[in-house]
Image (tube, rainbow, N blue to C red; front, side):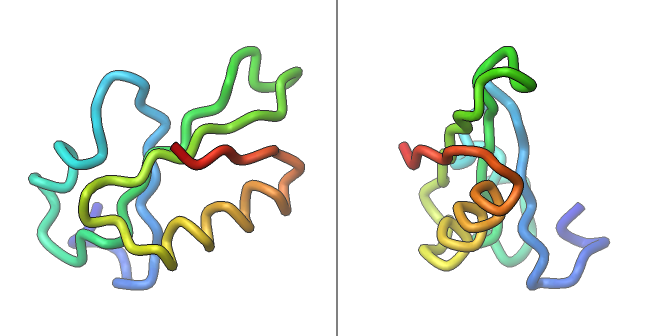
Length: 79
């Protein structure tokens, strides 16, 4: 996906079993835009969503993802 999208696009995964740092090892560039956004279940009832940055995730990516989650009515928690 990183090769098919513009560098400003955040690449988010809802995985609960993989760490973003491991996913970033397979990314080409830029690694700073990868983040895990995992909703608590059941997602339609519980507004919490975990934001799990990887080793290379930028502060800006975390901030933008946090703002997006708030904009859609979720309560983000950065781990």
